[in-house]
Image 1 (cartoon, helix red, strand yellow):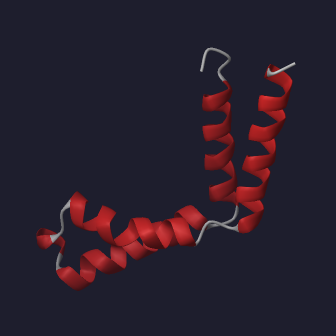
Image 2 (cartoon, rainbow, N blue to C red):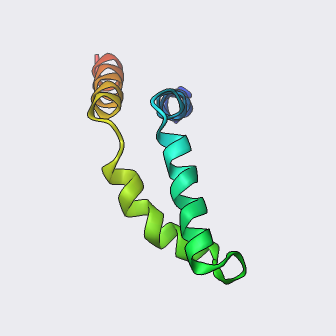
Length: 80
C-alpha cells in the first residue's frame, strides 16, 4: 500500500475495463434492470445484487491475466 501499487493497479483495471467496453455493458445492464423493475422501485442494493455476478463473470480473461501478471511482477520485485 505504501508503494502506491494498489492504486496503480486499480487505475489500470479501470482503464482496461473501459477500453474493452465492459463499463458500457454494465451501464446498459443497469439501465435495462431499472426499466424492467421501474425506476422508482430500484435500489442500489438491488442493482448490486443483480449486476455484480454478471459483472464479475464478464471481465475479459485478457484483463484478468494482465492484472495477475502485474501483481506477480510487483510481488517478485518487492521480495528481493
